[in-house]
Image (spheres, rainbow, N blue to C red):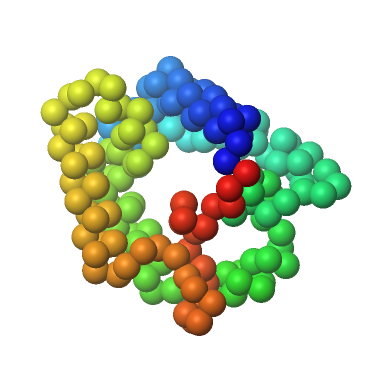
Amino acid sequence: MTKKVLAAAFLSGLIFAMGLGLSGMTQPSKVIGFLDLFGAWDPSLGLVMAGAIGVHLPLYRLIRRRPGSVPMVGTCGPIDDDELSEAGIRGSISAKAVAGAAIFGVGWGLGGYCPGPLVVSLVSAAPGVLVFFGAMAVGMLIFHVAFGPATKTADQPGPAVPSLAGLKRG
C-alpha cells in the first residue's frame, strides 16, 4: 500500500475512534441500554447509527456514480453488484454465517463491546476491556486453528470471505 493510502486509512480510523469516544459508544452500558427494550431503554446508540448512515449514504451514492469506481474488497471503493453475483455472495446465507452473527450478537449484548469500540477502549487499560479483548483474541485464534485462514481459493466452493491477505498492494 502506498503511504497516501495508509495515511488516509489511519486518519479514517482516528476519526472513527474519536467519534466513538466522544459519543460514549465505547461504554458497554450504552449498548446494553440500547438492547434493553423493556427496561431502561437508551436510544442514543440508534441515534448515533442514524447519524452515521445520514453521513455515509449520500457520500456512498456520490462515489458510486463516479466513473471508474472500483470494487470495495481490497481496493477501497464501492462493491459492484456483478462481482457479488460472480462470487456467489448475493442472496446466499449459510448456516455458518448465521451462527457467526448469532455468536457476535450474544457477545455484543452480554459484554457490550464489538471489535471497533473494544479496540478504541484499549487505551483505558480497564481490566474488563483487557479481559474481553483477550477473550476475543483467543476466540479468533481458535477459529483460525479450527477452520484455517478466512480466505477462499478458486477450487473451494461457496462465497469468498474477505481477509487482509487478499488486499492488493498499492
